[in-house]
Each structure stands twice: as C-alpha cells, then as structure tokens.
Length: 202
Ligand SMILES: NC(=O)c1ccc[n+]([C@@H]2O[C@H](COP(=O)([O-])OP(=O)(O)OC[C@H]3O[C@@H](n4cnc5c(N)ncnc54)[C@H](OP(=O)(O)O)[C@@H]3O)[C@@H](O)[C@H]2O)c1
Image (cartoon, rainbow, N blue to C red; front, side, top):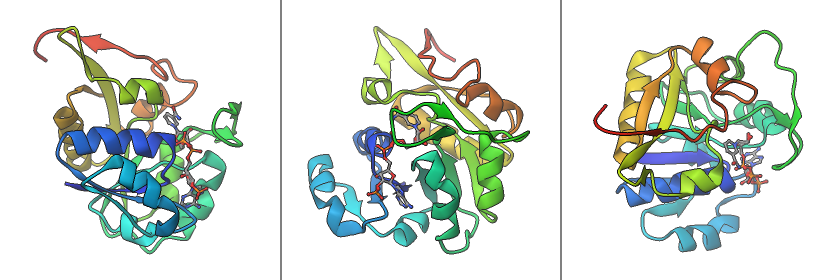
C-alpha cells in the first residue's frame, strides 16, 4: 500500500513511521514542495518519498493532516478526486498546532464538512482521536492492543482503512458513519484523545 499525506507535520510523520514499520510506502507533501521535505524523508528512511500535493493525493489512500484553517484552501487546490480514500485526521481548532481554539462547524461532523469539500473522495475519519506520542508508541502494550477508531459512509473504504490499521497492530473499532461516528471521535467528542487498550482476541 502507498499512502499519500497532505501535510507533513507531526501527525503525518507519526502515521508515516507506523506505516513504514508495517511495510507500506509513504509519499509526503506540504505546501512548500518536495525539496523542503528531503530531510524529513531521509530521516524516515526507505519507503518514504517527498512529493507534490497533487502526487500525494493521487495515491489510493491519502491522509489529510493540515491545520483546520487550511483545510478548505488545501482541498480546493487539489485535482478532482477519483474515488481515492481520504483519511481525515484533522481536528477543528483554529491557529497552529497547540492552539486549541475550537472552530465552529455548524451542525455537521467535521468529516462531513471535509467530505463536502472533497467530492469524489471516499472520506474515512481516523487518527484524529490519537495524540502523536501515542501514535508513535508501540500499538501493543503488555500484550494488549491500542484501540483505533474508524468512521465512514463508504463501507468498503472504511474496511480498507480498518485493515490498514490492523497491519499497524491496532485493535480497530468501527464507530459507524461520518455523522454519528465522526462526532464521537472528533475533538470535543467522548472518545477524542482517549488511549484505550484491548486485551485478547477481538
Ligand atoms: N499533533 C497531534 O497530536 C494531532 C493528533 C491528531 C490530529 N491532529 C490534527 O491533524 C492536523 C495536523 O496536525 P499536526 O499536528 O500534524 O500539524 P503540524 O505539525 O503543524 O503540520 C501541519 C502540516 O500541514 C502542512 N500544510 C499546511 N498547509 C498546507 C497546504 N495548504 N497544503 C499542504 N500542506 C499544508 C504544513 O506544512 P507547510 O506549512 O510547510 O505547508 C505541515 O506539514 C490538524 O488538524 C490537527 O488538529 C493532530
């Protein structure tokens, strides 16, 4: 599996490390172009490459990992989606990373809003509930597996992200659609930031 990332900051790099460990490839991109990412991809090692946002978005699975305020502009700048899976890892906070001023998203879940800005993409909500140090840590803790949540309106896309997360080592819980599941795991929801462990087979 080759995963593209739109954004190459803390979340995208943590996902990249996890994906590379599981044997996948990662194409990272940001707004400043591939040259600005050489040091990062060198540090990530074999399997990581620097790309333009267009190249990253052409992967069959793409992580959206930009600050919330940049989501509309970023998505508007990309070519039309052609059924790729877009994993929405964003949270609705204004400002830069570490600024937790909540953004008003009206009556939609944040991923419904993202889906509306990315017609043709199959949006799956995942990763947003995990803080980066937990994502960077081993998914298996004393024999128990860290729990990851997925929500989507497209069942096939959700299943494929679930399978991806299982290759990382997570125990995955399907929270339902973008509306209901999204609200549960997004910032402000009851599962946001939770680091749960599951023991035994699931
Ligand atoms: N940090 C966490 O623990 C965590 C956990 C879960 C979810 N999240 C969410 O994930 C998102 C990203 O968070 P982060 O912590 O990774 O932020 P970050 O470290 O600030 O990284 C943001 C990345 O987005 C890139 N970017 C900004 N505008 C862009 C554009 N128009 N096109 C392409 N790339 C663009 C930035 O690079 P350039 O400015 O160079 O383009 C940077 O690589 C946020 O919505 C956050 O709420 C964060």
